[in-house]
Length: 70
Image 1 (cartoon, helix red, strand yellow):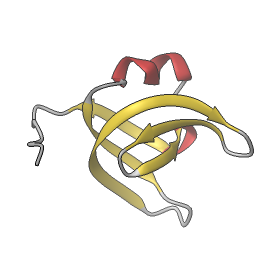
Image 2 (cartoon, helix red, strand yellow):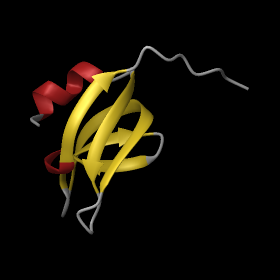
Image 3 (spheres, rainbow, N blue to C red):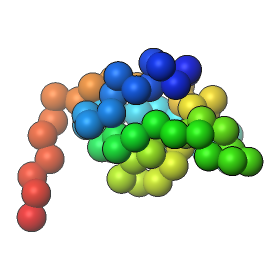
Image 4 (cartoon, rainbow, N blue to C red):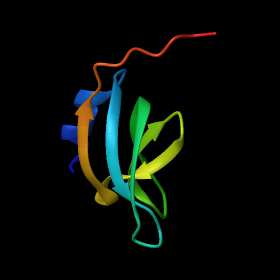
């Protein structure tokens, strides 16, 4: 995924499928805060669960779910 593609999801709640360091596939619902270049990692998706490298993302879909704030 390119930075320009990922920037479309900033401010959205998305369902993301990505691989971790061990190659295991993970699917989670996250809120996307920003897309940024992080030295030594490269382009990353900044989310509420942490930074996810763009080259590890398999799919990214906008969620219909709305999270409730406490």
